[in-house]
Image 1 (spheres, helix red, strand yellow):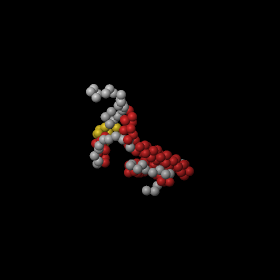
Image 2 (cartoon, rainbow, N blue to C red; image 1 turned 90 degrees about the vertical axis):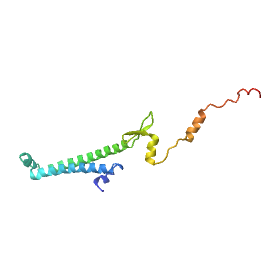
Image 3 (cartoon, rainbow, N blue to C red; image 1 turned 60 degrees about the vertical axis):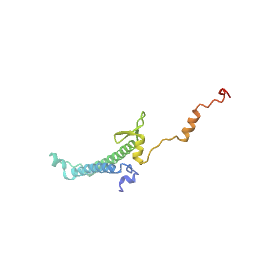
Image 4 (cartoon, rainbow, N blue to C red; image 1 turned 180 degrees about the horizontal axis):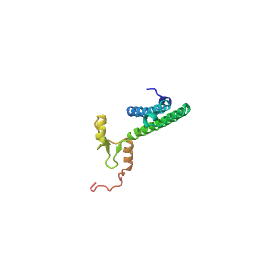
Amino acid sequence: MQTWLASLNITPPSRLAGPWRQAMLWHSLGFIVIVMLTWCEEFFGLMFWLFGRVHQPGGLDETIFKTAVIVLLWLLSAIALHRVISRLQYLENFLHLCSWCRQINHAGKWIKLEEHFKNQTGMQITHGICPTCASQFMSEMPKPVDNAPAPVGA
């Protein structure tokens, strides 16, 4: 989908591409309607037909200026919308882990860490110790004392 956003190097967030495009579509349609209403007022006196106001054309230069302001606001709000959706994706990428029991909040349910990994990968979980933790653990262990008394009767 090549759009004016592509020229600004604004791409949809990867996981939210569908909702992002839908939000941009409705956003753009809203601004297109505003531009169309502005030009309908200029050429057809829309306010007269809707509210009975006297039609006073402001001239093409005023309508062009109004359109330019609307398009500028459209662009600025599109960029803001992109930033909000990108931030939403960033925040949704966090995995909520209980600091007390290490359960994970996944789809509104708190499940054990091991169960979450088993559900996501299909692999069985086992426990072990990594080399860094093993060397730290061994360095903290008390060393055996060699000057213990000799056993009786030796």
